[in-house]
Length: 90
Image (cartoon, rainbow, N blue to C red; front, side):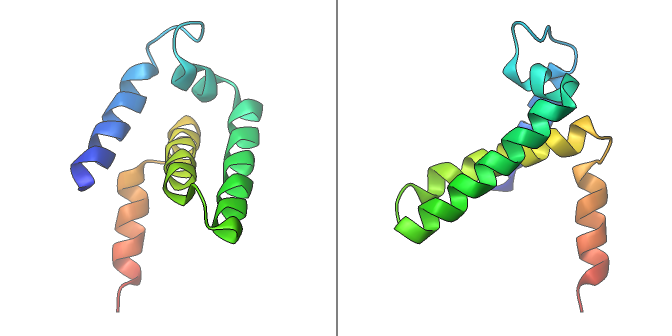
């Protein structure tokens, strides 16, 4: 299950070396305003889909993708986030 997330992180990191004109992910990585806008948009869409009880999985996937790109684009490694979550376990 988590191999998909690991593959997503790997792909996002590989796309840093792509051209923004050829890679939507690279465009998000290089355009901070676009990335922030997409994270906010996708979270709103997820909340709306939960309220309407429709398309929740699709919207949740969009949130995860855009959040992962946002984190990577801002120098926040998912490994560090996971380590922080581990520290918080009781």
